[in-house]
Image (cartoon, rainbow, N blue to C red; front, side, top):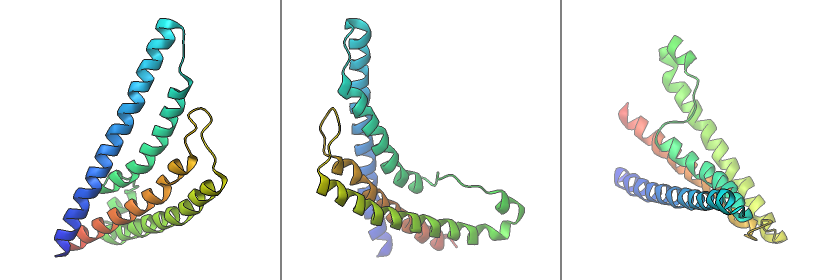
Length: 160
C-alpha cells in the first residue's frame, strides 16, 4: 500500500517538476531569443525579458532541487565511503537527515519570507509581478525536497 502511495506521489511530483521546468525555460528562451533579434536586428531591447530570465533561473533552481533528489544527483563527497565502505549506509542516512533539516528550514523560513512579501506587496521593477509568487517557491521547494527525501529513504530501506 505504501508502495502504491509513493508511486502515485512520484508521478504527480514528476509531472509538476517536468512541466513547470519545461514551460518556464521555454518562456525564458523565447523571450531571450526575441530580445537578441530585436537588439541586433532593430537596435531595440526588451527590458522585461532580462527580468523574466532572472526569475526563471531562480525558479528552476529551486524546483530543480527536488528533481535532483529524485535522480540522486545531489552533490556528495564520497571519499570517506571509498576508504570505509561500511560507513556507506550511516553516511547516506546522515545526508538524508541534513536534507530533511534543510528542507524543513526552507519551508519555515520560506513561508515567513513569502508572508512578508504578502504584507509589503512588493513587485518586480519592470514586469510588476508580485514578489510573493517568487518567494512562494521557497516553501514549495522545501516541501518537495522533504517528500523526495522520504521517498529515497523508503526505497533504500526496501533495498536492504
